Amino acid sequence: AYHLMRVMRAWPGEEVIVFDGSGAEWLATVTRLERSTVELRLLDRREVDRELPFELTLMVALPKGDRQRWLAEKAVELGVSGLVPLATERGVAQPVEKALARLRRTVIEASKQCGRNRLMSIAAPLAAAEAFSAPRVDGALRALLDPSGRQSLQALLAAGGAGKPRSICFAIGPEGGFSGDELRLAASNQWPVVHLGPRILRVETAALCAAAGAQMLGCDSLCSGPEGLAETPSIK
Image (cartoon, rainbow, N blue to C red; front, side, top):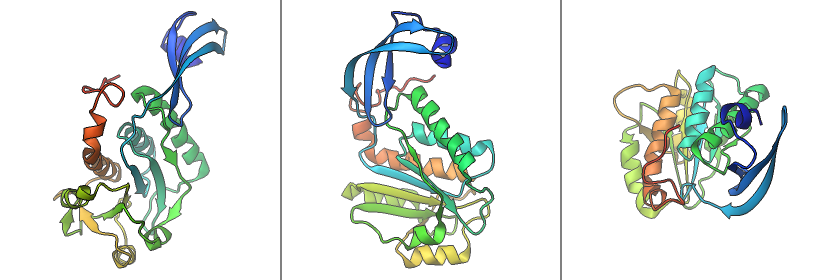
């Protein structure tokens, strides 16, 4: 209500779009403004799909401070389906519930800004050993990002993209990298270890680089017309 009244300067009679976070949105009319509330009349309900043609999950050993918020915000803009805080041996930030609540608020704010009507999920923290021990699902493409990888992410996506994966999952370690035990466990459970080039990237940079690369697999559907992401995305 504050954003609508004080930032967007809405007035009675003005039309706005509201969404429920699960893919539906409504055209609505502002009917009444009060000190801390806004009353709307819902009009047409629409199902508008702005999602990638596959589930994209980032399993990330979260960085410290505001870098977490920045990571979540940009992941929403890039169409990431779910963000899973990864508990690793060398992790520097503890994904406590208070921090996760802040990230979930960031998801809503970022979704409003970029016009996405389905909320990216913020999962409960997951131990790296548990994540890497999970069996691979048919039609899923997954990889662990680490400078020690012998294959590039670009090569992995080029090979895996031909089969049109139903889901993609990337695991990104902490500032100190995955431990030797974690790397061996992932490799033994068919997690390809891939690199992102000759430079060492920060956690959030690596995560978003991977998400942007994956997005290219679905760019045909993303750029198909005004009901998807427009040909030239607006910048707010």
